Image 1 (cartoon, rainbow, N blue to C red):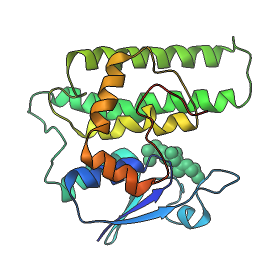
Image 2 (image 1 turned 135 degrees about the horizontal axis):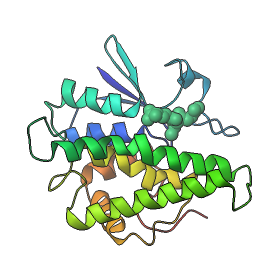
Image 3 (image 1 turned 120 degrees about the vertical axis):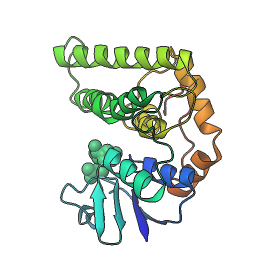
Image 4 (image 1 turned 180 degrees about the vertical axis):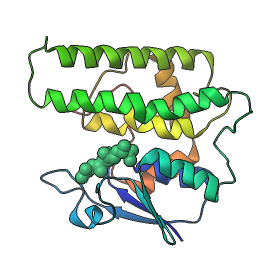
Amino acid sequence: MLTVHHLGLSQSERIVWLCEELGLDYVLKIYDRDPVTRLAPPEYKKLHPLGAAPVITDGPVQIAESAAIVDYIIHMHGQGRLAVAPGQPHYADYLYWFHFANGSLQPVVGRIMMMRRLYPPADNPIIVASETRLKLALQMMDARLGQVPWLAGADFTAAEIMTVFTLTTMRLFGPYDIAPYANILAWLQRVGARPAYQRAMQKGDPGLTPLLTAANPA
Ligand SMILES: N[C@@H](CCC(=O)N[C@@H](CS)C(=O)NCC(=O)O)C(=O)O
């Protein structure tokens, strides 16, 4: 049986959402973050050497890393649905935006979050470079979503599932301004209207109102 080990308020929301979009039969195990460190609890740390969410188990298979898990589930349980196959239109777009999520967007938001906790001067070159990178990434996404409804093109794909966390739940940990990006905001509303997204967020983080607007948490 496919089991999704979901750490509350974390990147593993992607996997719950994917399973809901695909209509899979799966077991959801929820783990709360340590209230002091905000890290995964010891029982989560035992699931994988890195001890970070997401992790899934599927019979003898145990696998971590969001993108690897999303690919695994799509191909092992979803008959390739929500991916774009080689040779299909928009294959390169799909690949790009799927990997942009954790290859560029999430790392730069995480870097800014960590650095701000050290209260660097505003002209710190790493902060300045990171904020410039984030702005470029958001401008690029916004321009893309002004041309097509979903990142890979006309259809909703796993590229959305990879990307949305950083624009929403991640802002609980490292707030940043998405108000200037009207196309990203409209896309988030389309995401929020999806029943599978609503079910996933309700199941995985029932106390959370998904951050689908530009309002940052207080
Ligand atoms: N690139 C990894 C990132 C994993 C990661 O950093 N997960 C965070 C949650 S957002 C985590 O588990 N933090 C708690 C901890 O490290 O104890 C992935 O996407 O799977």
